[in-house]
Image (cartoon, rainbow over all chains, first blue to last red; front, side):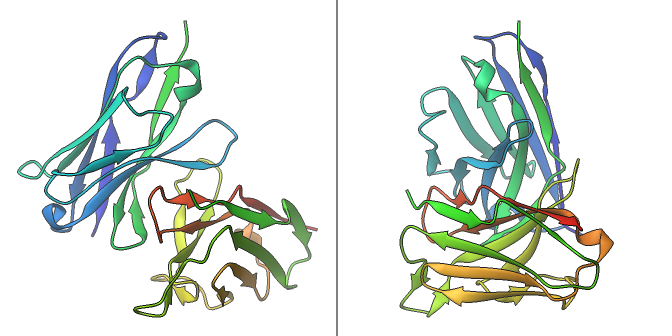
Amino acid sequence: EVQLVESGGGLVQPGGSLRLSCVASGFTFSTYWMHWIRQAPGEGLVWVSRIDSDGSSAIYADSVKGRFTISRDNAKNTLYLQMNSLRAEDTAVYYCTRQGPYLDYWGQGALVAVSS
Amino acid sequence: DIVMTQSPDSLAVSLGERATINCKSSQSVLYNSNNKNYLAWFQQKPGQPPKLLIYWASTRGSGVPDRFSGSGSGTDFSLTISSLQAEDVAVYYCQQYYDTPFTFGPGTKVDIK
């Protein structure tokens, strides 16, 4: 059974940092491109970032470029999102998703709240 | 970026009646080399992650009831629930995976009349 489990969310002050993790199981993690999608409270779904299967290529939404870094450790079946210089508008539930080639599996999400 | 729009924003349908949601992309998501539309539909219930309903515009996901169907090609798509059930109350999103950044429609809230 495919599972994606996010962790690392929490409350952080503006300007602070947080690292999200997503542990994958039930499939060969190293062969799939992975994405982060976020959803602000009461709002819709917004794509954040994508990384290819071996971690050699990553792309970002303009709103997070230069502040967020996506990475992966295929030996640990884990996807990461390092978030720096956090702003109030980054408050959201962050989902990791598998691309195969559509977004077929999603984690339960990790809540990130940016507030003083 | 490909902009996705949906209509209506919300709709209320009686139990057992048909519900139709429309989705439009700002450019074609039909990939000519394989004749596939890179368009998916998701269902999201409160407090839950999105669930894949439809991919390739018209292929039902695993375990998705056959009352859900997708149609369309190019830039115009629709999701139809042929006979609305109580458990179908949710927000529905269309999404293109033709090009990065992947983009979503704003969502359509479906409720019971």
